[in-house]
Image 1 (cartoon, rainbow, N blue to C red):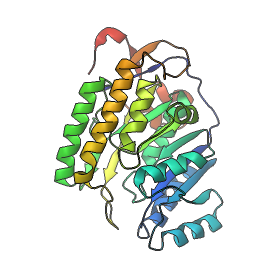
Image 2: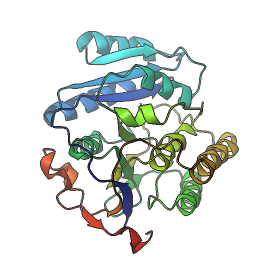
Image 3: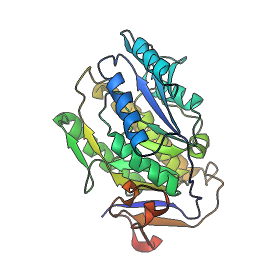
Image 4: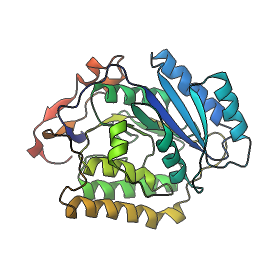
Length: 296
């Protein structure tokens, strides 16, 4: 059974504005469907106070026009042209610079991430966790049409990260996660310009003392466009970020940890009760266990 580490005493939030940052480069075939699906799901779940920040990473196709049309139809959609150099990490960082919510989720533009899982993340943050992490590889999680080579490399990399950090989490490299605003403030400055940002953000959040919960999620391969992740270019970049945060964890003597007080515990993940509507009951079936039970 999976486990997670965190802090007690984090205040629940009854009313929380959610921002969703979506980096987009040449996503004319999927961005409208992605934004519409997110909006419809959030509205159906009573999460009307939200914004969707679509960050255009200087696309060469019709992506910008489509996002601007969505913005004109609903002001909760925002078009933001990244002022930074090209790259997935830069585009996400550009979105994190301008989001206005109390919490922020990072989602892909190709509808590979489920809007229903976004609701589960929201409920976990609403219940008091600093971070909401999803796993495609725990009980209840799933992947559909995952390329075999990428899947093989994913499992090796995540196994190594889990062994190094002992954080009981097996899907660190997945970009789809959600954070309270104070987490994004605490983990600055962000350095990664590419997909290695997907490990820099959660590992810094964990190492700097923020609480997190893990829930099963579903991933589906894109139906339009092409993946921007190039495995042959990312190996050394992932390694650099992992080692950077690992050294911070062991050598910085806590200089960069969050200033919030609280007792550190490890949480065992049960059935994802956060999927139930409402913040109060979101953690009802999360069992707190002693710190000395060891890592999963």
